[in-house]
Amino acid sequence: MTDLRICFVGDSYTAGVGDPEGLGWVGRVARETLRRGRDLTFYNLGVRRDTSRNIQARFAGEIVARRAAGCDNRVVLSFGTNDTAPAEGVGGERVPDVGTLAVLADLLEWTRRQGLPTLVVGPPALTDDSRNARLLALTALMRELTARRGVPFVPLAPSLAEDTRWRAELSTGDGAHPRAVGYELLARRVLDSGWWDWLDSPAAVPEEPREPEEPREPEEPREPEAGGVPGA
Image (tube, rainbow, N blue to C red; front, side):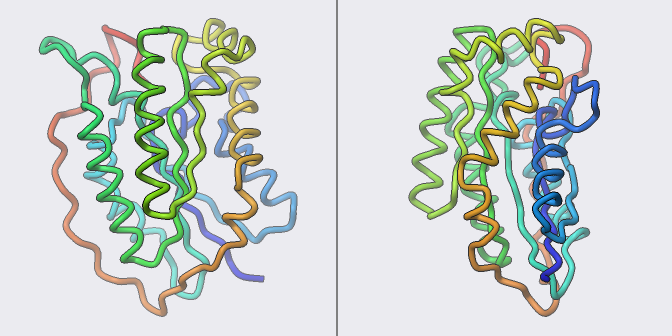
């Protein structure tokens, strides 16, 4: 059986912030994958409050440090919620849609050149309807971009925006992050949206890890935890 290694790169939803069971959706997806007999090593590389640009700055180094020759190395990308958050003190969003899409295109091009099958998971919905409008628009744009590149995409916001269980989970938590039931909802959507087909898709396994390109510097720093709209 091939040694399967998956890097999950994203923000606090990837990290599983707020889950009292400490699994998040990534841990639950990994648990089910292992239960079905896959020889999986998974790396949770979620960082709280990261925007797409923060992720872009650390992405290549994170992946290369965990990739191994002779293994089925893969990447799951998930971001966007923090991009749509209000930029403190300057107005507008932390990262506009065009910036998010540029980062996504750049990261997908990098993984393509590195021979790393990639899955993109869109941002979930919130309880703020105005934010949800932006998240739904961004999700549609991300879906179009990934479709053009032949990359599988899991949309979360459209189904979660009206899901009463999801909204209740956010309200029970800190307003931005769910608890265990909410992360189970996320995991189930990922597992039921082409996860197994993606794992069974052809894998490019380079004999030797390729040298990474220099990661780009983020265009704005992470904001502090305190104050403002809760970050993801």
